[in-house]
Image (cartoon, chains in turn green, cyan):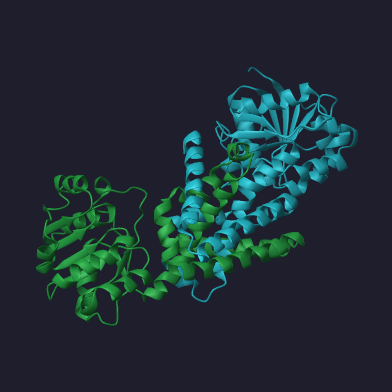
Length: 292
Length: 292
């Protein structure tokens, strides 16, 4: 895949953006990477680490002849960025993003990109973010990881194929959903579990005997609450961005717990065992397919 | 600790009972270990693996001159065992157990051990049970792990000290709670998380699009649902054995989720961030103390 992209511009050269650049470089899929960001120190670090070739100075200039622009900032900053770059995008410049919610990003694009909306192909790379920053960027972050594209009706097939090509050059496994499907899926398998894990620990934090309780917490607690160590700001933003789907999931889950509570109160051993068994079988089948 | 116990009798020579025997042997804290169990094949395997010296034949005989008897069977079998052994216990024979709930085990002891109740010192070794069976037994299973004793008012200090000595010979960290405290603590930090994890996967299992949903599940889901791969029978029994405390925890948690749902519905960013931050800080402090 020699030089599929002559020039790529990346806004936000941290874990997501930096790893994208490193992966494309490793695949010899890009000739030049230009970086923008809020922190001069991070940009300089990214340049020294070989993530970017140059630190961008003039946004209008740089996006005009870019093949691809990646928005890898927090989702909250994307609307403003879209408004800034849209008037200057070249006719063949494509834009993609790394946001973990899609309905809100698409809405921001529709509000801020005007006639350039067909050039924006939204994406969500599913890559763990326990670390952050340019120093955490890795050329193999996306290897074997899923990336979901949520193409717009306005996107041409060629535009979607080009953005897919970029993520595939990172050795990611690319699939497509509508933005609405995407947000419903991730509410169920990612956003809800994060909320539930935060809720358990927050519940314990309110108690006078929390230190006693925690002193007996073991490996089950450790695994269940690992995601409660995630960034409060990021999960505040994700929760609010995907509020409708997440509220539906929360209500369904409260219903599930109420049913389980009734079975427990009634001492219904058969029902409890059947619930646990159904869960274990689905979980085991998933783990086998995932090789985890 | 040379020969602290001349003879130990173990009912159930699987992971819990077998590892107890191996650990005491390694510490040179026991001269002879006799095993009983439901499966002749498992007992023979335990003998060949050097877990036990002999397979017991006559319960009455063997417990009469034992220093210590460990009940390491499923909790549901303990009442019957207690009734069988009690009339034959020597005057100095102590009995302990490895059950993960304590209120129900104590109730079974009161109902079945009569005047021998002072010889029973209940215990709960907190050791992961992902594997089971004699082949899974390890001399170092309990090293650095917590064991909770829940002594009875009838136990003499000497009896509690002897049972503590046995678990400490396994290099476990021994602490004491009342049975009621124990069950309340484990409802909060172990039993509730297991139910919540089972509930999430069971909720997904009911859906027509479960395969699509699961195909996008990633590492957060994996960690959160690891305990949903636990034994349905064992968790049915634990849930029912600790029903009252677990129902209280479930209600508190449903209240927590309802509060979180209201904050989300109101778009209360500050409240959500504060909940997540409080949780993360408590979790981080715990992880640091545990070295996990």
